[in-house]
Length: 508
Ligand code: NAD
Figure (cartoon, rainbow, N blue to C red):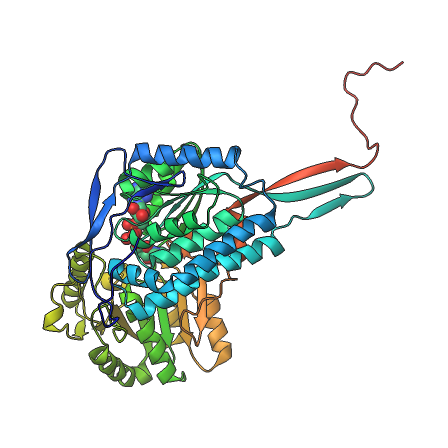
């Protein structure tokens, strides 16, 4: 797909892009029904393009192709080094097209181009990382039993796996799953978020160019209740890796029970950021502002709840107000834009309704201003909910927008209890220069990932995921390859004449 997205001066602009098809058995095809749906640009609310709407019958075709590729094809059987050549080739092709992919991502999601460029670079690294990881780490163990046995394990791919992804940060999240799934020898059906299909299609084009064997990688665009649901219930799909809302995750777990599928759940969050009065306040401020207002606030690990110690609250809130007034709201294609429009009108209305609710619940709402000329887009300005209390709905429910609730606290015990008094447990951030306290609080906060004196800085080697309603299982690092995309198999080998019970043997 070629996006005509720059003008004669090389400035990025908003233009329609080519329509998107399904990618099944290494071919770009229309949906069986012939139906396509509109894909809107969040900045203009005009049509970006039309997208083939995959449904059950298209999923069935893709699964049949992926099954054939797994069972009859070369993918799982080829030498690991050769499979990794394909994986590294995908990374190289992504690198060649970084600018094009970043532009498509910003057109589709409204995420600022300065941020999508970084995400795309991470996507190429996802492939290289898993190429290295599988070659070096994916080996079994052996268990000698005296001189009688040697039992050894090996890790086998599962078969056809379904990857269901959301619309926030699509390319990065998709490659984060596709890379380990393919590197370990599985064949894949990707069902991307219906609101952000452009870069998933680009990934199909790249993988097509990398010339992977037929049927190894497939993309079904379409809606969750039809395309996604069929993938989940399909008997030939062995596992579903899902990233999305908590409520969708529980529906998927229910629907996958019939076929006893393995599932991995990366779900929502309402993460706390705690600032003690001895913290480096300038750095804590930078991190708190970036953590909720980057990615337009549509980030699963965003610090939606900021707990500030009583002694520094007034000072910290004044600094927050200044930042919020100065955040550059603008065209996602403009390199200087810090905050772009939300993904779609429905989500925009949801975020706005939470801001109204905050007022009803007693918060003072402080916001930046959306310039008049941007009114066509789904812009919600950076928003502070001041004087918030942790038990308010706006502090308990995931808003998933540029909205930070600020909550005052006095003691360590009190803030730990409040941070944990929420159904989610994805991430947490602690700011203090007392490192004993930093560790203590990080140990006590119920979350899968904690940062002390840092924003969300990713390390691809760590287990990524959440606890409570934020997820089940971990992907990332070697966790993805050992715990999700492969299965251990044990081979027991007798080395000598060990004892075998002799049932029914007649003694002579
Ligand atoms: P969503 O749950 O609405 O949709 C996610 C995907 O699931 C989409 O592809 C959708 O089509 C599909 N889907 C919907 N219903 C389905 C069904 N019944 N069966 C199968 N598939 C179905 O989520 P969203 O609104 O696209 O994404 C935002 C959410 O994702 C937020 O809650 C955010 O916190 C979460 N998220 C979590 C992480 C993480 O790593 N924990 C990362 C990014 C986003």
